[in-house]
Image (tube, rainbow, N blue to C red; front, top):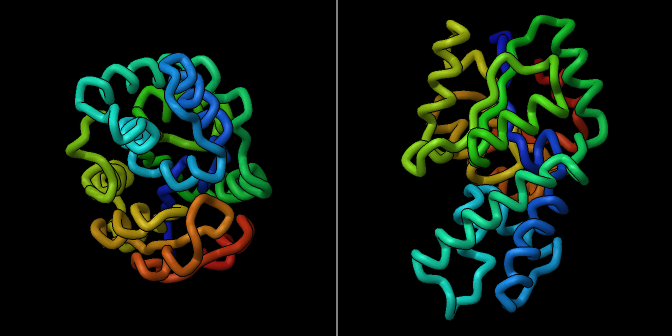
Length: 215
């Protein structure tokens, strides 16, 4: 079957946002005299939304719901200020998106990052490429819930099986499986090839240009 649309994850797939996310959270932790974390550690905190990241970053002794909520609000404030400061597209992504656009492939972004931030980053870094950028509006719709992915397919008037779902994490692969879309894992993000395959990836690519071969 010829694929007619692609849904991309954002962090770890289209853009490397690790430093901006980590810097924002570490600033919050420092203000509270809590231990901070390295970029390598944050790499495994990313993927399930910023609230989840905040919970993982806080000390186990200071992880109440109230503390998580308070720090989450502070983290979002800090991150909003710098969310495109160090964040850049991965190698080959801009060229890939330009080629896909020239071929009239429908493209969207679906992220577990807050909806406002997802839209801001997608618009600033990829102003011409995406007709839809959807982030997290409510915890119930967080990936691997396929609801938003299926809504995108309806908007495009495409069957789910006509759509590639491209991501760097187990959560993305599970979302693709749940939506009955074709799961494509990428190795340049925050997870391993083994994790991607174990979570349902039907193929794993090492460079952005390899996505053209699948199409």
